[in-house]
Length: 44
Image 1 (cartoon, rainbow, N blue to C red):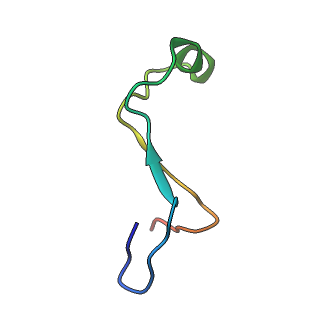
Image 2 (cartoon, rainbow, N blue to C red):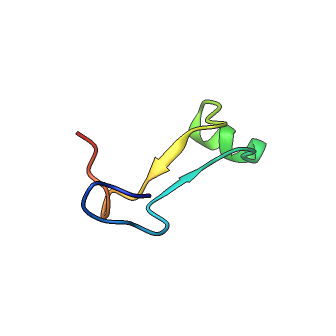
């Protein structure tokens, strides 16, 4: 991930094909969602 000030490795990832058990645990289908490491990225 690249910002105007820094570049972060492994600060974001996606779930293109989550396991069915993960979807059941979360309670909804999050296929295609992008997650961000909140210790490295602040979304405003």
